[in-house]
Image (tube, rainbow, N blue to C red):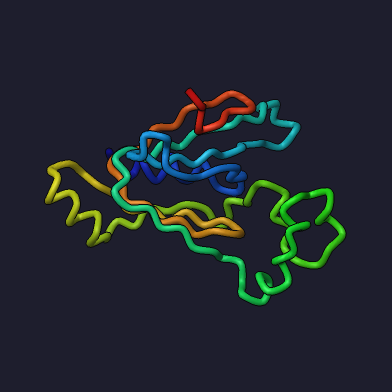
Length: 157
């Protein structure tokens, strides 16, 4: 996958909302579900987009919420928007994270280079930052597709 095309696809996530991220149910690819909106005057309808990071050999997720905020955000009422809205602390129950400062390709990645040499296909490293998490993914390809409202990544058989 061309690095310039990949970076352009990642740029399109800026300032939208992550509503889910994790490995797919078959555990090879990593998906990030983004709720994309535009200013009302543009006429662009909101959409749920699935960013599918294919052949994801490494996924790291760490908090970007400061420890002081965590300390005052342990109350389980904060995982529900209605019960947490008037409490002090981080309201986890909003069920989305702002993609800010956003996603960027890390072109000088030694890890991605090592995987490329070992497997024989191109790998890339990306850093996705939101107001609550930092995701680092090592993957080979990115596919973006719209998913329906109510999409759930895990469907029971």
